[in-house]
Length: 234
Image (cartoon, rainbow, N blue to C red; front, top):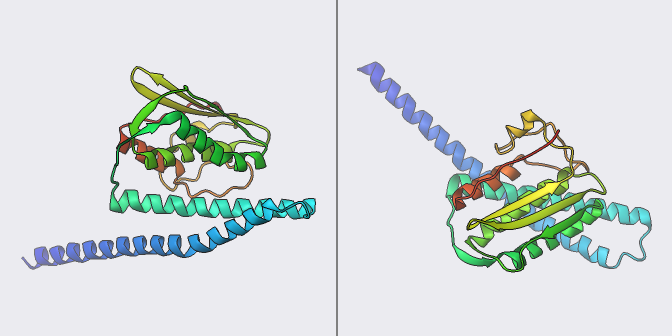
């Protein structure tokens, strides 16, 4: 009887320890996201101001400004992924359905990525019907599109093209993002949607990665009742 009681006490102690670790992990992510996001946002705003009045800068100074801009964008993207991961894993997700004007929505999403794409001389083409509505959660959809575009730009080399296409097929909406990157290895392809995975295929301009981007995309699509697949050529 004593052995059974000791085992029960050990299990209770272990569960308590695991719960404390999870709380600490959530707190750390919260502190990191809050304390780092504010200064990075200020740096981002300053970089934007300098870029608007860059005619007096030398080409070398402009290059450094672009590098600072990329570092800040990478940092904010990492924080956003960590916050999304915390919300998905620990807080759950409230889905708020609404009717979305998909062509207008996609035009805005693509426009938001053009600055980053142009820094790598990457062209983003958007092909969408003139009129198409979708009942979904607009915030989740935005994160999904951002994740796919970010991935495409990150792994594409200078001068390449990214094609975004939206089609209406049998009462379902298909969104495809096609790039001209090298493609993932068969090993990487099997790991694409796992969390905290570092792939053998690397970003082409030294961009950072949390290993959470496509995991978040798939998690959000699962909650919206959608599916995702990757076709790649090594």
